[in-house]
Amino acid sequence: MITGTGITKIFKQRGSVLGAREVPALRGVDFAVAKGGAVSFIGESGSGKTTLGRIVAGLETHDAGEIVIDGVPMSTLSHRRRQPYFRRIQLIHQDPYSALNPTRTIHQTLEAPLRLRARQAGRPRSWVDGRAAELLAMVGIDPGYVLPRYPHQLSGGMRQRVVIARALTMDPEVLVADEAVSMIDVSLRLGILALLKDLRERLGVGVLFITHDIATARYIGDDGELYVLYRGQVVERGATEKIISDPVHPYTQSLLSAIPVLHGLERPGAERVVPREMQREGEPDGGCLFARRCPFSTERCENEMPVLGRDGGPEQEAGQEGGQEYACFHPRRRSVIPVGVGE
Ligand SMILES: Nc1ncnc2c1ncn2[C@@H]1O[C@H](COP(=O)(O)OP(=O)(O)OP(=O)(O)O)[C@@H](O)[C@H]1O
Picture 1: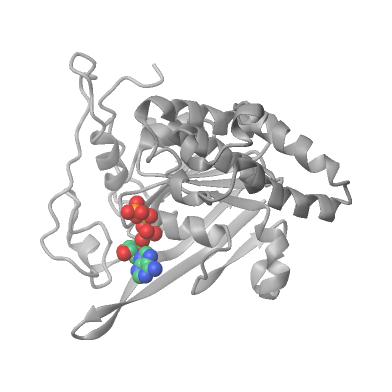
Picture 2: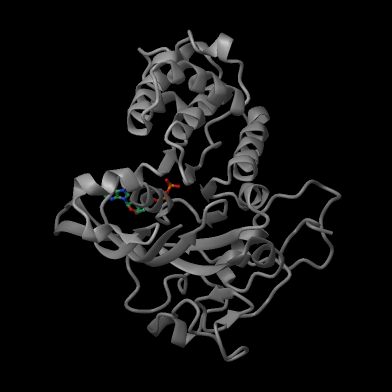
């Protein structure tokens, strides 16, 4: 089990005439991923998804908050002692081209981490080759074909499968998949998503799925949880199916409204929530982060920041309903899905 509480990250960006500019990438994010669970984070570009994935995988520091892995708070350990914990969380990048060393065959790529694994578990070296073949078969590729080859000799889909096999060498509890199919040919994407889903079911590995695309989040974890991230704040979270069929936060509604629909498949009666163009860039002064773009914002939204799970009303008094939480002062359920889903 991996949990994060209050995860906050502020980047300092240089280059402005006024000196370094502080960019809040994550603002007190809470989450939990259980073994075998599926948690998806969705949000637009710059919402902090990649930063969160890197922090969860131990590749990025954070400024406040705590990551707890199997009951152990990481802040209580030295950098070296944290490593075995973070090894249980493996990151799959969006770019399988740069994730693999072009000068190493796939055999060499898998051999190094498996040797480490063999040493840790007291297994003989002969175990390494068998395990490499087993992992490749598990991710759906022929070991005999792939093992002697270099990454450039493989298709993008095969490369991403090799990256997943390499992640599995560590027997991870959770795979963090950051836009794992965005750089792969459209025709091969579903195969990779099906593989991640299959690994969840077969190995009980948890998946933290990071995407800007609600449809892929739904495919991976229709039984899981969805977190909607906007400018580093979780604005809505709950069961994936519930949020997709019954979104409450106007930002979630705008994401769902934007799903393209094939002519003739439009769902009659679906509302569309279209965000306003942002008139002023920069940080709002204490108000809701979405207020400047929200078509329903009021004076209160400009001045006060709603808190996830606490602020609701006036239509509903609490920001929490049946496990679904949102950070909005004016929550209203809207039927916004433009296509028939789950019907
Ligand atoms: N190393 C860095 N230095 C400074 N600012 C950064 C750094 N990494 C990210 N940021 C800033 O933090 C914010 C969140 O970035 P992040 O890459 O996590 O978002 P994202 O949702 O993954 O976006 P994308 O989908 O475009 O990758 C952005 O404003 C980004 O410019």
